[in-house]
Amino acid sequence: MRQVRVTISGFGNVGRQIAGMLLERRGRYRQLYDADVRLVALCNSRAGIRNDDGIAAAYIAAMVPGATGASFLADAKPDVLIETGPSDFATGGPGLSYLETLLAEGCDAVVVSKGALVHSGARLRELAASTGARIRISGATAAALPTIDVLEIGLLGCRVLSLEGVLNATTNYLLNAMMARRVEFADALGEAQAGGFAESEPSRDIEGWDTACKLLILANFGLGLDLRMDDVTVSGIGHVTLHDVEDWRNKGVVPRLVGRLDLQGGKPMASVAVRTYPLDDPFAHIAGKTKAMRIQTDCMGEILTMGGGPEPMATASAALKDLELLLAGSKIAASRD
Image 1 (tube, one colour):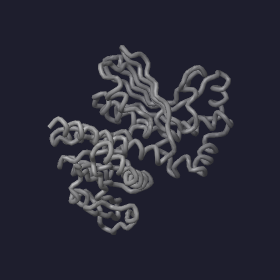
Image 2: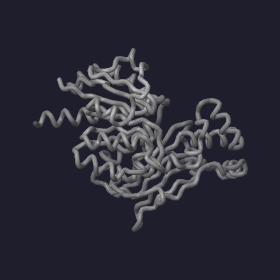
Image 3: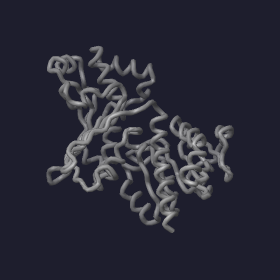
């Protein structure tokens, strides 16, 4: 049985959820992939823990101050890095250093945080190709909603004409609340924050930047484009008023913050903006914090995916799906050798 050594960078809610679920699934990995998956190191920005024999669940919290950084994880000689740190698309965030260091050593990567993928996606792909490493990004592209999988596998042989997605759960929740209860944006946001449905600092969500990041990642990793943030026209939902709500209700339409990519012209056109949909459109019925993506193709027609799950389990599950895809790919390759 082959040993697969896994490290996790970033240890917030998602990182903790991934660690716990990974340890619970070790029996599954043995049975399905003939793999002894061991969590050998993890760290956040201040502390970490490493054990070559595998970290047991009872010891995950016993992190050592100062045991952190890309070299700390690299010393564990991992086969897979799961990157879950803070996301900063302007600088790449701390995840960029982890990814650059470990991809250069041929370590596969499961990426949850979006910053490094937006900031240096092309360079990371080139680095991975040069060392034979693989990058999986389901957790960075709308979590449990199947998005990148559809583009990479489900539409092989097709040409994508356009893509639009409700990719941010917080803004969808807020717009639904405003429409259902006829409340001002500030009131809906305050209620969402009190209920844990919105971050205490929600600007990346409500200004449209989170949606723009996900759209860029789908375009560049899923469709082979080379778009930058400057190529995306971005507006959020902070300008929406009760007057807008009443107008939409009277017209029988529903607002959504939508990331859209149009590929039918000579140049790809990417945007994030509030769009409205009639009641007979599936996008009008995206409830709560659900997400959705719709793709128009040349020969498969319209493809629609819709769904979601509670966080942080949904994002953690997407990351561990990527881990299983890596395990399955390695098993297939080993069987051919």
